[in-house]
Image 1: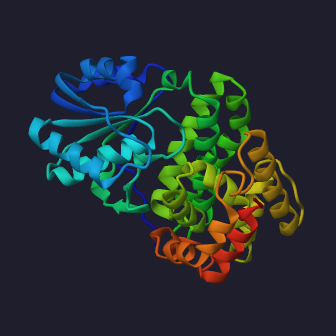
Image 2: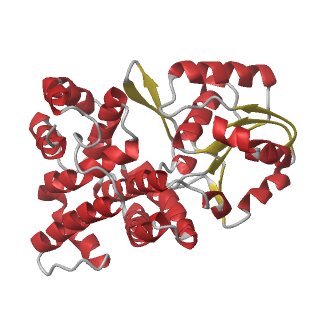
Length: 359
């Protein structure tokens, strides 16, 4: 027996933020970062959303528990009737956590400005404490509304398009083979991968008309992984990101080809079917799987992402010195629970050895 649900209402397309006016909130609390505060967009959206709006613009990448605590105190003091999150995954996760810890049942409207994390439709928030990333998981964290406005994507930096876009691919591929996958999550994961894989190069190259498709793919892949689960790619990315502060999507780009090989014993047929759907060919599953892995490597290169952890600034000698600790932390990550191959030290060591590179 299967079950599937996605409680978040999605408003999609150019100019979608204008829909905020229909909420008619009295007091809104808007969570964002310094960029959108300085640009004036945060205030513009605040004025659309409510008669009275307070803006919290202190969010940084890899939000800490201390940051969330400061924001939560301001939410409790301001006492809004709605939360709004404007920004990338770190902003959305911060707003989710602030609402959760405030003790108030506040509806959250998520306005993602990057196409990667999918936090606008998930039950998750990732917080960092003492160099370790911790997932906060609760169905109540899912935003009530996600506003996907393609007008907000026109000036995305190329590096952010690449990092976030590869995050979409990793979400889709891990959801496709996750142990909780269903026919419904499979449909979302497959379409998300095909949309992102087909449109990322042009978006990265400056074609803004392709960014709406990648934006949709980010949300679709998140709908899939929110129920199908993720896997060792994300478990390792969370661990390495907390320790070495390399952007999450970049870590996924480095790890994902190696993860495909590691999971092949349990997931080869699913990977092969996706490769054929993406036009990569391969009459035999082994050939199709090889073609998929090679295509992921080519795309990584085309997006000018590092191919190894060494190229991303992680010293190989430091990684090898701390390999046992990294693997133990990754094995404790909840994402391991839904990996198609039951993870152990040998499996994670295999992935890290392929990804480490040379100093």
